[in-house]
Length: 75
Image 1: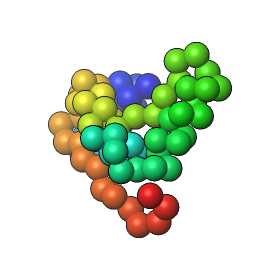
Image 2: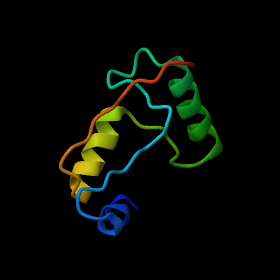
Image 3: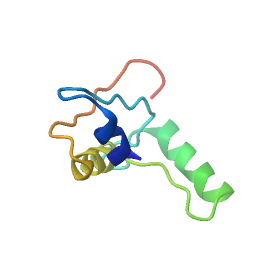
Image 4: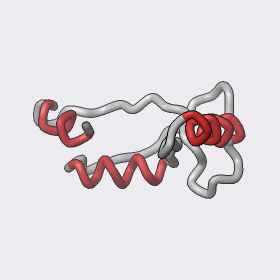
């Protein structure tokens, strides 16, 4: 899906992923970790992902820059 998004964007375009991510160390984001547990319980292979996972997938899809910006609100 990320590759399709990359290919659909005009030159210089950007992709914004708005998601509650698990912290890279998988230790601090309680809400994200609980959501990941729920995904694992409800589906065979479900899981939530870290910012590092998302950045890696975006680079593999062709994006040259990828970063995580922590928003205020629910942790």
